[in-house]
Image (cartoon, rainbow, N blue to C red; front, side, top):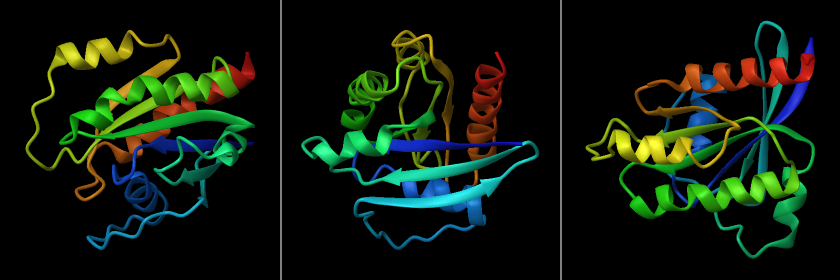
Length: 165
């Protein structure tokens, strides 16, 4: 049995907390509550226990934020499909994560897929080109539970493969 830390990273209001709640509790709330600091949840899968660190979105200038990344075995970078700026910031989040924990597996959640959006395959291909450590990029919806389980399970598989090698 493996137990390890996954850190949720992304801009303010992209749905990090909603994805964690959907995955851990199978619930969703329309009510928005901003995460302050870090919120930690736990979910056990077949062969592993995931400690999910949900980091607040306003973190660029906080020195303590980097401390939250230490010890992570994987990252989920979340962006809002309806806010181009959050997609553009994926590269910055990826660079920060890998500056603290190099060569760590990453999944990218392009969240709020239940709403109208205009992302192209070209944009997705450009995101994959950012790093060989990106395992998957999925359009997710915490509200409709679209690709949420798949997001976490693919990252779990990639982390286990890396830990076993």
